[in-house]
Image (cartoon, rainbow, N blue to C red; front, side, top):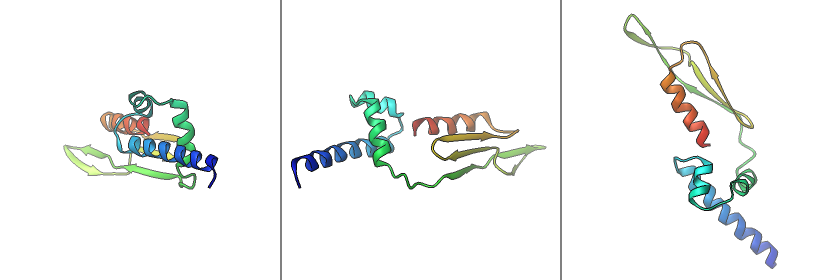
Length: 110
């Protein structure tokens, strides 16, 4: 292995450690970069390079109760998050504002 390969592997390991540390944290990427004195743009670059591009789009269901006459019933989700080269939040009538706020916080931290 030549010097260039070792330097590249060292960079990969450095950024992989930071990306993994950020993923286990509860803070946004920008906040993590500020706290760790990292370039946000470099973080984005390495995240795109190192995080698997093989991830399949997925639908995350957030079950929402419907209150009818004081009784909570399970129904189809009123809030859905679709992940596919970005994030899309779909909201149906009858969504819960507090749950939406929590979902948006989670998506913003990704």
